[in-house]
Each structure stands twice: as structure tokens, then as C-alpha cells.
Image 1 (cartoon, rainbow, N blue to C red):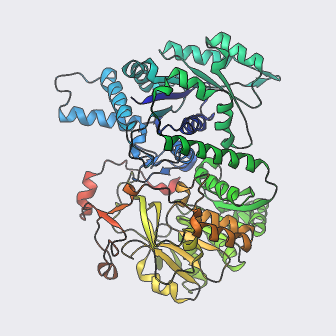
Image 2 (cartoon, rainbow, N blue to C red):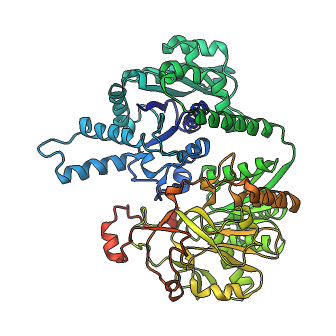
Image 3 (cartoon, one colour):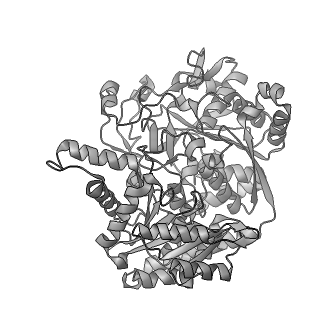
Amino acid sequence: MVKYILVCGGVISGIGKGVIASSTGLTLKAAGLKVTAIKIDPYMNIDAGTMAPTEHGEVYVLNDGGETDLDLGNYERYLDVSLNRDNNVTTGKVYQHVIDRERKGDYLGKTVQIIPHLTNAIQDWIERVSKIPVDGTGEEPDVCIIELGGTVGDIESMPFVEAMRQFQFRVGHENFALIYVSLIPVVGGEQKTKPTQAGVRDLRGLGLLPDLIACRCTDTLLTATMEKVSMFCHVSPKQVLGVHNVSSTYHVPLLLQQQGMLDYFKKRLNLDEIIIKDKFKKKGEEFMGRWRSLTSGQERLFDTVSIVLVGKYTTLEDSYMSVVKALEHAAMRCGRKLELQWVDSSDLEPPTQTTNPVKFHDAWSAVCSAKGIIVPGGFGHRGTEGMIAAVKWAREQKVPFLGICLGFQVAVIEWARNVCGLEDANSAELVPDVKHPVICFMPEISKTHMGGTMRLGLRPTIFQDKTESSKLRKLYGSREVAWERHRHRYEVEPKYVDELESKAGLRFIGKDERGERMQMLELDEHPYFIGLQAHPEFCSRPLNPSPPFLGLIAAACGLDELELQIKNNENGGYVDPHPEEDKSVPESEAYTEKGKSIKQSNNGIIKVKGQVNGNLDEKEQQLNGVTVASEGQA
């Protein structure tokens, strides 16, 4: 029987439920238990795919192409697992599921209602997904962490709260526990408990009783405050945990472990009754040992590495959460503290020099002093000329550079304009009637539906012939194939590839399994200039940094460090985080004459599954995505 731990919060949202949920899972995994996680988002969207990054933070992409809440990134990073789209439950998904069943006649004769039909559907969903193996062992998880987004008491989360109230009786008291995360504000120098008392009272009124109360506070939770929470919230002092601000969120699992979380759950959920294989116990101990070394080592770092992120959504740092985490992972591997500067790409453009010369000067000052530059993904025209200017600086001044998705595309545009002489080169996304569309709309993608219609999920990149000397290929352990997650509608126009590669220096070192799509580029005569159409940040782990990010950080530290990290990764320092069962691609039609001559299986390197319907009109009729005006409006 799977054990369930529900993590919910009160007072305000965004106080760290995701980190606490992930840290709880890591603490249990360290004991040898197999752990999975589910995130409940009470918004009406089917998924996060059509939401602007400035609205809800980054859109996180899973192996199966699911576009989800960024907290699933926390789960994967902390637990070192690979989740699927069903691990993210939204109000839109559940309502769609219930309505589809009603239309098929599953509730024939019944009046379909929130209770019991919707709440039963939520419980069935959680019970089904909690039993799916996620760690590559093929075995059912022992524990499922469920995070309820938002704040208890919000009208949109009420069906989920009621479902969880019922669920505790469905699975039994010994299989269900609840962590309530609450804010302890400081007013006049005093830690206040009244918001927590009120929140717990509301939670009890809804039929849920907290087993642990995690008190989020700026400084260490005082004993007097803990005793007050204990007294007025009807729990013992041992059930009150202090989660104060720490220098890094990687310390939170250790903080929870020190306060006896594991010992409490062993008794509360009878965890000792679960038979844990010796190999899992040993693996868990080794994992926690490496985690402790990572966090303690981070505190002793003195050398720094300065990276400038040139992006479109810098007003909300959560828009690039996985990018920042991947940079942190790489910096820790290189023994450096990350100094990250944020530059809005619009501030690098000439109009800003007139409207706000101070911003223009500060932005260029940051770029010019950077030891490394990263340009991440995005949509729409705004700020892209600033990105192109930053790429030009990095290329000409030999500054280590990493371009991701849109960053990869603007690097191609910059090369086409300034090296190949195609002065009007641009992307068809940014300028539809451009003379030289070196970036084009993918031929099989829907132009009328936005939700879930991009090229999404885990895809292979085949390293091309004569790329054995490539820095990026070596960082991937000199393998033939690199597996990364994709999320894009535009790609390099195949008819320009020969012209782009005709100028010495640029090589498309990695292509898709047919050789039609350019997925990696590298400049030869440059310390480190890399572009990827994929999003490697989604696959980075604290103990297993993403190769492109590791290369950027190492190159920013110096060429000696880059050589050291390349040698380390070639000798097993990089471990592919993806389970073998996820490494297959759908069968598709070739779109170019050159592609038709290349087998999609690429001489047996790639497994091909299924058959994609090549009729775009028919495919669009089957879509359930949400139609929106334009992603570029974000």
C-alpha cells in the first residue's frame, strides 16, 4: 500500500511548499524508500503551456511532453526521478475528464455533481498515478508526496480539499499524513502565530488535521513561538518544524531531517513495516552522503563565477527557475559560487539609449564585464534584437556563450547577418515576410491551436560525423546521442544550412534522427560558443549537472577548468538521467528530399514507435488544446 503525504499551505501562496514537499521526499528517499510526487494546481487551464512566464513562472517540460508547473522541476531535481504529465493535476484536466465520461454515458441516469463525481475522479487519479514507477527501477513507489497549490480556503481549491478529506478515509489513517506550511511573520521584532492559528482552524473546519506544521520564517523559529503554535494548534511541540531562510534551498532537507521528520513519519505511517531492499538502503545512504557533501561544500566556496543572463522575462525570476538551478549545479561542480546578473534584452537595444540611457548603460556594462553569457528561451519579437546584440558581443569578444531554444535561433540569425552577409536574415516568427527566413515555422505544427501543439518532450540529437573534437560532444561523454527535452514551434530553415556552414567556424554538430533538424551548433575558433534547440536545463540535477551548462560555467572559470570538466565527463562524470523506456521517438514523415534518404531509426541508434498522422487538418480536429491569440503577447 502506497503511503501518502499531503503538503498544503495557508496565509499566503508562494512560501515554499514545493521545496518543502521535495525536501520531504528526499528525506524519505535517503531512507531507501521509493518516492513519487504529484502536484495539484487549482487553475482552470488544462496545463501551464499557454501561460506567460511572467504570469505563473516557467513552463516545465517532462519527458512525455507534458507542460507543467515549475514545482515538478523541484521534484525531479531533488528526487532524481522522471515524472509524466499525469503527475500534474489541474482543475481543467479533472473537469475535462469528468465531462468526457459524462458524454460517453459513464454516469448515465445520474446527475453529475462536484460530490461525489468530481471528488471521486480526483481520488482515482491520485491513486492511479501514485503507483507508476518513476525512478527507473520498474517498481511501485512506497510513498507519494501530494502538493496542493494555492492556499487552503481559496474557492478554486475547495474540490481538492474535499477530495483529500475523503481520501484519508479511503486509504486509512496509517497511510495518510498532512504537512501544513504556514507563514510566521515578524511584527515589531516579534514572531506572530495568529495567522497560523487561523489557518489551522480553517483547515480543521474542512475536515483535515495537520500532522506536522512547517513554520516558514525569516530567522530560526524561537522555542516560545514553537510552544505557542503547539498549544493553540493542538499538536505536540515535536510536530512543529521551523523552516527559516537559509543560504540555499539545498539545505532544507537537512533542516527537516535534523528536526526529526523521518522519525516522526516512521511512527505515524508505520514505515518500518515496508520491506526495503539492501540495495535501496545503500543507494539512499550514498545519495544523502553526496547531498550533505554538496551543501557543506557550497558553504566553503570563496571563488566566484560571473554569468549574465540576457532574457525577455527578467521581471519574474521564476520565469527562468530551471536555468538558474542548472547554472547553480554546474557552478557547484566547478567549486565556484554563482554570481548571476539579470539583463532585460530590451535594455540592450538602441531605443533604450534614448528613452532610458541609464538602463542602457547598465545593461551593456553587465554584458561587457561578463565572464559568460546565456540567452534562454522565449516567444515573440520584443527584446530579440537585444539578444542578437549580446550574441554578437560574445562571438566577437570570445566570451563563453550558451544559447537555448530562442537563444540558439538568435545565434543563427546573428551568424547569418554578420558573417554570411544575409543582412535581412531573421525568424519567420519575428518578421513573417522577412527576405531571408533562416528560422522557419515547423511544417507539421498547428497554426490554429496553441495548447500542447509544439514539438514537446524528450528527443534525441545525433552527433554528426567528424564531431569527435567537439567540446559539447565530449561533455556528453563522447556519446553518439544526446537526449534532451524540447519545446518549440520554429527551427532552422533547412535550405539555409549549407550557406550557414559555408563560412568557416560554425558547425551544426547535432541533428535530429533524420538529419533534417539542426539541434546543436558550435563555433570552432571560440573558447565556448554553444547553441541548443532543446532545453537542457530541464534535465539538470544537483549531483549531475547538465553538460552544456557545465561547459559554460567551466569556460567562464578558465580553459583549464573546461578541460578538467571535459575529461571528467568523458570518464563517467555525466550520467544520463533518463530511463531507457523513455528513449524512443514517434514515427514521422520526412519533410525534405535529403531527409527521405535517411532512415529515421538512424541505423538502429534510435527506437521508433507508433505512427503520426500526417494529415494536419485531421490532426487539428482531434486537438483539445486552448486557442489563444498569440504567445508573443507574453
